[in-house]
Amino acid sequence: MALISRATVIHGLCAAAALSLTSLNSFAGASVTYHPIVPSMAEQTVVLTGRDLTVDQVVQVARYGAKVALTDEARQRSADAHALLLEAAAEGVSVYWFNRGSGSGRERFIFTGDPLSPANKKLLEERQLAIFRRGALAGLGPEVSEEEIVRAMLAVRANTMSFEAASPQLTQRLLDLLNDRITPVVQSRGTVGEGDLGPFTNVGATMVGAGNAYYRGVRMTAAAALHQAGLEPLAPFGADDSELESTNSYATGQAALLLHDAREALSWSDLIYAIDLNGMNSSVSPLSQPVQANRPFKWLNWDAARVLDMLKGSYLFELDDKRIIQDPESLRASSIRQGSAWHAWAQLRDVVLIQMNSSDHNPAVRVGASPSDSWELSTPQLAQFYVKGSARNHGQHGYIFSNANWDPYPMANEIEAFSIALANLDTAVAQRVIRFTNPFFTVTAAADESPGEPGRFHLTQGSEIDVTALMQEIQGLINPVPPEGNALIQNVEDLQTQTRLKVTRARAVVDNTIELLAEDLLTGTYWLDLRKAQKPSREFGAAPTAVWTAFRATLPFNGNGPASATQPIHEIAADFIHGHAAVSFYRHNAQEPDEAPRRSMAP
Image 1 (cartoon, rainbow, N blue to C red):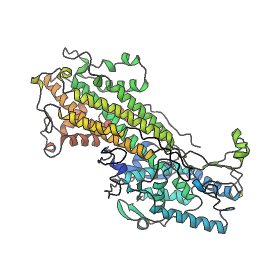
Image 2 (tube, one colour):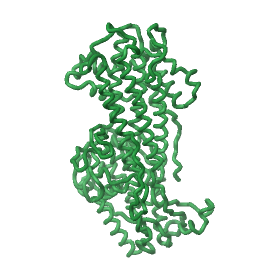
Image 3 (cartoon, one colour):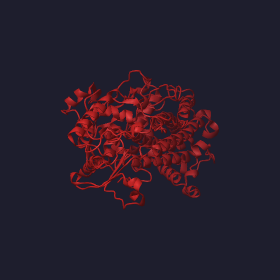
Image 4 (cartoon, rainbow, N blue to C red):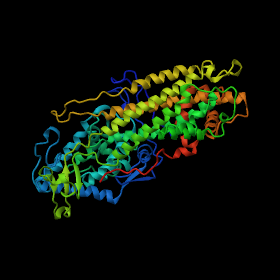
């Protein structure tokens, strides 16, 4: 399955680093080339419950155009929260970002009394419409150039907003944007990673027909896009600006794309490692079960067993008097780096699944909560936020609390940790590629050598330069983003998580990892040909053989294929990885490690 594109951009955070085109697009202020999706899954529908959205489902919606539908239960949950919100104001309960202001205006009353009274209803309708329209002017460019990023943020928000007090028409409009493929023009910056307010104000503008949008990949005014889809501009009400904007779904949607692409990168790293072991004529003892049992790290043991299974049937399990007793550490310990990266991936997966299946909204609306549910709810301080309910909301009671749930630090922290773990894996990949240039490890003579691929120096020495260049970029990308604590909004908002920067860097590390693995694939398959030439009876195991055979159909040994005459062989190798899912070569790859039901703790 194709991964995301790459482009070299310069940013003040990482001078001359190659950052992902999907996230930072290009130089600030420069025009960008828009990349619409190919809606190959447009006939499929992902059902959103608010509780069990998966990474793969986000990708189906964001990258391949699958439609979305809310369950009746999810719609009702949001409708009940909206009714409780209106009831709270009517009862005189102070609600942050509704009848009270937000941020530095939190002590100011926007209105008092019943929000459905003629005067208040008119005030709220006009106020909300004005706020949504202003969203067309918000944010900091350049524009997001990848349609999949905007669709990912919309998909995650459609799922999480089922817990919020959104008006029914706002809930439906979010689904309409996805299903009719109206993709708002969103500015890529304008969020400090502590609630993605800026990007979602852009979305709100499209909903009411302000600003610009893409309709099925074609840019036009938002009003024209709504007209093309047969939709009237949204009439927002209540606290719809808050319900839409107070979220981290811009970063969370990208984190879901990151997880999907990283899973493929990690899967390919295991496959190519198995090829390298064959190419180096390595000792397989480090992967054996008794060795692994001595140090029972679950993920390391899992990865070693996985690679060992790929090698089953290989000549490496036969005696060979030229096989050295101990390989360089990059060959010996790659499964340790890879198992550790899988572990970091799983930790990130778990927090992202929670993040996109629960509410990160402020305020928190809890329909049905009672003073008897926990001791603190009956105290005078919290009792003031209790909504008793009346006939107008079918007697439903509950609480509405100001909170800090929009701080996405658990996810931001794991994104950065995964980047570092992946870079440490990449170090092993780079070093083992370079070890192939040393006959001390390969135990080969001059007579064994082949001219190598076109575009290479003698043997694989061209890879040394390429992998070093890639590692220099990766090393710059994994420097932690310095923690920020700027006192914004009159000192009210004084923490920033910088999630956008962290997920941008992480996606760039994944991109560069694929590029690095392309060099490794060129090197490893070259050495499989040499080992086969040394002894034609040699076998390499089912998975390495399948990859080698398929790759040689694309790039024959010594580059005699037509593509190599017009395209750099690195691009051929990278395109091969992008275009082939790892599961097509290793049957067990379809099962995620540590697979088990993972549900959020959302109400």
